[in-house]
Length: 105
Image 1 (tube, rainbow, N blue to C red):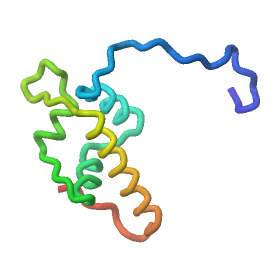
Image 2: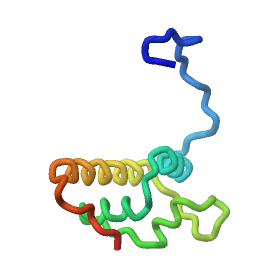
Image 3: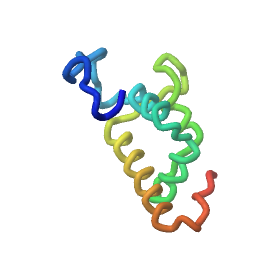
Image 4: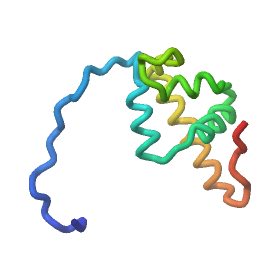
């Protein structure tokens, strides 16, 4: 469908498929990573660039199910910080395209 085609129906707000707990946003983070092809190493580099240490255990805890012993809930505040760190890193890279991307640790 092109931008000029009339949609079959108007956009409506979809129903909530789950209860939303702002202290348990791992599922939303996983969807964001899948939709953006963002790699954990890129997130770590972005967090490190803003002075936030991100351990292997912490990164892994965001992508396992809540029944896994490595699970640790990601809060909405952490999710926002992660996204802002990635956006800041991408903006910095866009401003200086000749510089290599930040290396993953």
